[in-house]
Image (tube, rainbow, N blue to C red; front, top):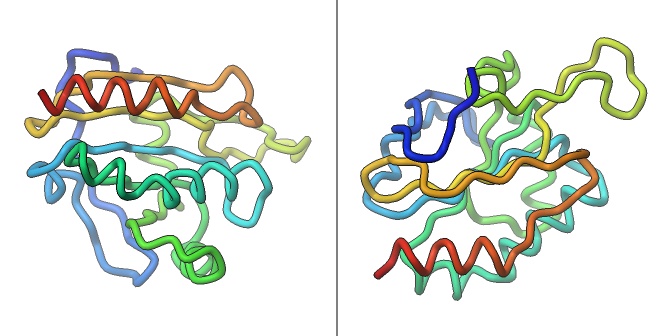
Length: 158
């Protein structure tokens, strides 16, 4: 069942790019930009995560923490983060439990029959862990409207 606006975001534990277990609930002191993406080392995903990186000052002013999630291994995420100077947490959902729980799976990505990845999606969570904004891409190649995300965050920071 998909996670919807108004619901408490289900907590989870995933490994980060340093292979440390990280819980969603550890970020509750901030507004959270939960950004699901299909795969590291791909053009659109790199652009999206680098856009969040480049907007760090704006996001910090809105008391927001970006957390990226994909089905990539922690090892791949580490290399990709290093290559792109991504300093926010990237979490590995290699067993695909969280993408399924949040209702953001994408099947047959890139024409690879049977391959299940994350679809591109953004969930904004307030400090209490309530989903206040949800965007799911109609196709994994679509990016979120970054200005809309910033506006939704600004409402949470009031």
